[in-house]
Image (cartoon, rainbow, N blue to C red; front, side, top):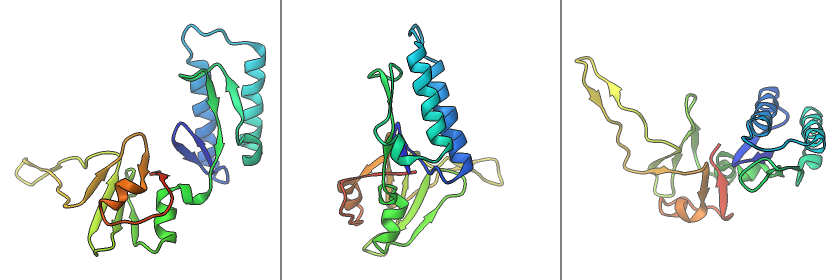
Length: 167
């Protein structure tokens, strides 16, 4: 798995490789007022080649100079357990993943369901044209696609590592 801007990309999945190619192109070519050098274009092509070859080790720590807020695109290889869903399953928690959004539904240590997502669930229309808001007794809304073990602990979910990526 490769991490870029708090998003995870499994390079063994063609669709995620495509998404990573598109993301780095967007970051690279959408620079406003930046001077793009031939060396930077070569680095971009090298990154594309490694993505296509599914070379996670080559991408780990690879940098394309001069692109993001701190001036670079940074790639980082992460283990499967950096992904919250995998870490929860490995720890024995019951986990269901939404098919339509970035949301996990987890049974915590007290047997209660906890919704972990990057957004509140939208209101649902009723037969009479009214809207009903979804309510969860236990809901953790994460920012920047990251969740910490400390945050999870508040919902009676105990994991050892400090930080995880939601999805």
